[in-house]
Image (cartoon, rainbow, N blue to C red):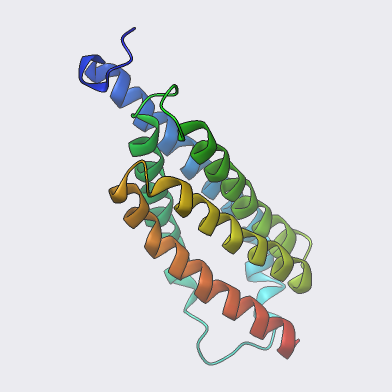
Length: 166
């Protein structure tokens, strides 16, 4: 198979994008599964700040953000595995994706607000690391992750406030 992206088949690009999408949305689905019970039993009992979004907002936001993450990673991966920086960018991306999924398991699954705060701060750092690696490879990929960065910054503020209030 040729290494030039112009010579790769359309099927290869579709498979690459679909693989990235399935992985990202799969992490979201697992997180949603872990969240289901506690969001109906434990989470409503917490004292929440005035800026807590309504529960119905989380699913559409996360589905969209995971799709944007997949698109961003695809733009990096399509450069080719042998392109300098792609392996490092993919490592950073996968680390942040694991931390993203871990947060739901810690915050909701273990019902640990403090543990969730530790994980989400690590996630923020991992997103910044990912952005640093994505920018030289694809400015579009970089910008696709900016809404995710801002949402996680907001979620960090929310998690920290929940920790202080509970």
